[in-house]
Every structure is written in C-alpha cells, then in structure tokens.
Image (cartoon, rainbow, N blue to C red; front, side, top):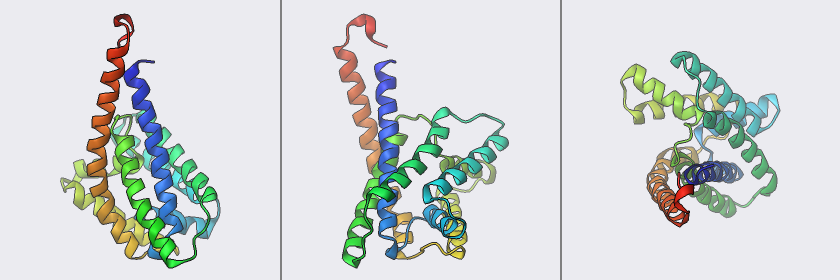
Length: 214
C-alpha cells in the first residue's frame, strides 16, 4: 500500500469512528433533541426493536440501493464501508458511554458531541474515499431538481426528522442546533483535515527511498 493510500484510509476510518462517537454523545444528551437522521433511527428503534446503529445501517443500505439504481453505477467501496461502520460505531459508543441524567451533563455531552461529529465528517471526507449514503442522496436530488445544496439538505432533514418524530424520536432545540452548527464545524474541520493529510503524505514520502515513493 502506498503512503498516500495508507493515510487516506487512516483518516477515513478514524473520521467514521469520530462521527459515530459524536452521534452517540448527542444521543446521550437526547433531552435536548438529536440530529434529524438520528431522530428517525431512534424512532424506528423504539417501535421495531433492533438497535439504533442497526437502523442507521438499514437506512444507509436503502439509500445506497436507491441511489445506485438512479445513477446506474456501483458506489465506491468506501460508501458501503461508511454505511456499515457508522452504525457499528454508534452501537459501540452507545454501549460504552453511560446514560447521563442531569440536564447540565446532557448539555455538556451534547455540545461536545456536535464538535466531535463535525470533526468526524471533516476527517472522513478529506481523503475522498466515498461519500456517505445520505450525502449521495443529497447530491442526486441537487442534480435532478436544480435546487441548492442547502435547500435540498434542509428539506431532507426536515422530512426525516418529521417521520422520526411521528415514530416517537426525540425532537427538540438540539435538533435545530445540530442542523445549523454541524455544517459550520465541518467547514473548519475539512480544511484542517485536508491540510494535515497533505502534510503527512508529503512528509513521509520525502523520508522514503526514491524506489518506494508512490
């Protein structure tokens, strides 16, 4: 494996772990509400069992299958891996992080979770190993309708949050906060992650013998 691919995979996998951790942290602060897609996953979990992570995987698989049919193109391997690992990481951290009952504690973990989520997205997107299922759906709708990314993203999130709320998922001020703030954190983290990834690759390529540089 080349130095470039090694670091790209490292960022991709670490970013998904961070994203799963951030989602779990916001779920532990669910008295404030959680992210739109997670409202749906929690609502499905409350009504039909399984786990929150399992519903994240099922929703992701459904979206990947749908977008693949529309595009008539097989998605990147990283997209499938994203679908699977995010759900597994959500369940892992939901198990490891204890429930928090105080309002102050929930506010603290929820706020920290937003930052961790935003950095997770920035880190896993930076190496361009494959868009997440939900991002792929957004891009297809942008192409098909001609509406802006922000309009389509907001419309999707409102729709899934509404469905999740009807299923009993926790909607609150935190749902709005996540929708408004995570993107801003991603803007910062993506630039930082791309810069760090580039520096690491260049640094370690410079240290290799010429025959090993790829």
